[in-house]
Image (cartoon, rainbow, N blue to C red; front, side, top):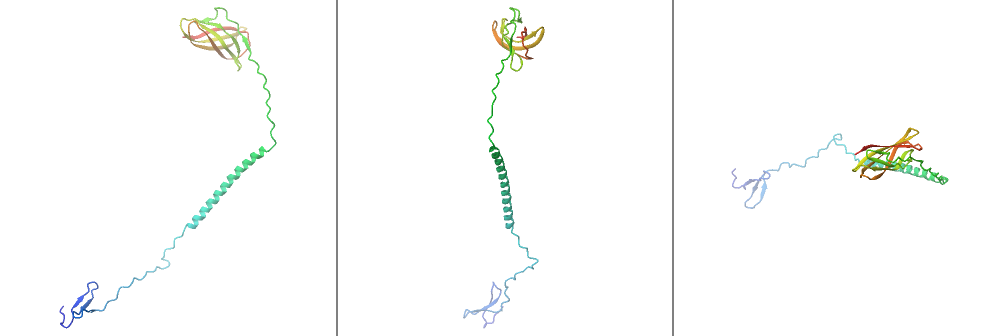
Length: 220
């Protein structure tokens, strides 16, 4: 656009787009157009009361109430347990404070009767031999303490030519009737050696005198 020679040149402000003139003689500038309405601050949008979010409720008060309630219940439980324990102690103390019990008296034990024993008839010389074993001495037949036959000192000799292990039975008769049997064993008895065998029985003890029979059940 041409500018009259008596008019100063016109320019456009790149920032605002407004036109202004600049007098080269004086160096002064002036706006050629009036400024439009400047954008003001945006109005604050207010929400209607029914559109505003309800304030969030704080749970602090409820939490405090629950905590106090829990502590109260715990104290009640502790008090109940303490009362129960105190009651038990009181009962025990009450029982203890009663008249002292008379000292226990222990009756003197009656002297136990010695176990009945009956000597058995000694075996005849050479008569009590079986499978290379000889009944040397039957000892004493007695009550074993539980009402049954017992013999702890039966002497038996191994007449075999080598070491043997054997099981034995002694049968007791009285007036022709068998009144009891006793059993025992000997382990690896050297040839010619006499051992002491303990004989036991499950038959009820009966006093003698007895007739004795000797038997070897097994010898190996």
